[in-house]
Length: 482
Image 1: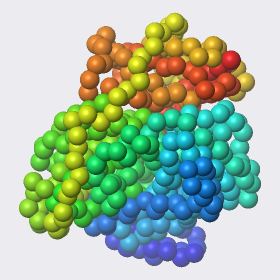
Image 2: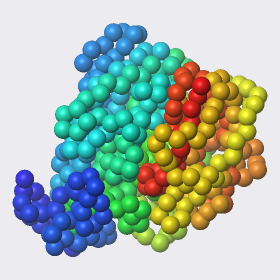
Image 3: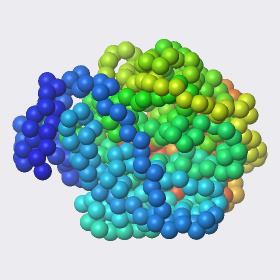
Image 4: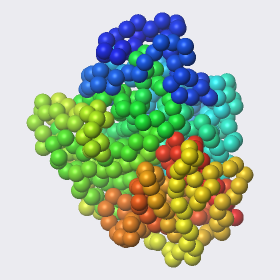
């Protein structure tokens, strides 16, 4: 299909039938994406900033619903052409043809059933990140939905408190590319505790997926493992968009779906805002901050009050973690205060009570390392079928995770929501990490202690760095609860 693309000079140029498209799985790197076409990298500085409205992720509608018992959804994994860069179409991989992926809304205690049909030419394994589910519904990296029309039904019991979850591919050695090409959706689990609060809701509760990307000058994605040239920032599938907001409070559910990039997010005027939640739902109390840091896979639930700004004000959500070296990756999203609106929402001083931490009976240590193109945990690269950690059902364990560096990592454990109890020798007793988590930053030279209770299900689950490229390079292992 003939489309148009943004050229290196920022001009619209016609695409022909021979233009580069998304590379098939296995054809990684610039050469795989471009084929024989004379295509060069897009200059990110040529992309106009804040000219596209940020789309809202569509909310999926169940095809069958049994109130307070079960909701059933049908999602199709497929390619689609979307305007990511202004005036051009990009081939992406999607759930239900939407980029960003759809939002599934669920409630604790009400089962969610998702029929996934895979129309891509590669196998896919869907993982609901942060969910407490049985092993056969967790997205085993070697149990794939067959390509070209294969299907699988996933059942999520939602037997956990409210949480900001998301879903993505977890097919081993392929998850890095499939996530890069767009396979990410949002799953918002609520419960009576969250619903009893008068937080911003409806149109004022906005999920935002944040990530980076690398394009060629035909506006097509260029995938390469460990790529350091992903310098176009996307918010809900648009490059450097804007969002019109009213002069009132908004709740933003931020999710970092990038392959490897960390975001340090702040308002351009330095104003404070409130962080009210993280991966596993609300914090015990709101935390007033002037920035939030989220590594790949992490979520931050924040409330920004625009009532302090006059109509006509513009300000930016910026990425402060760039060292000021590259202007384009410091820009994320522009807010435009374009109207007033009534606001009866509040952020109460107490949000929830966290479950008590039981006494831990087992202590383990894990070291994350990279070298020679291989990524390891405790010196071993991932091997399917090898059990790296045996855990007794019901055990409460403390894991000490160390990153000797160089380079950043993070750490994600399937099945459980854990607590971060110590960072670099300092106990975590308050702040943004004092809540339920499933992914935690472990920067170069850092050591983090987490505590989790392994109950609910027996079987095999993964733990790994959630920088997709690192997991695909082997920084992943298997635990077995028995």
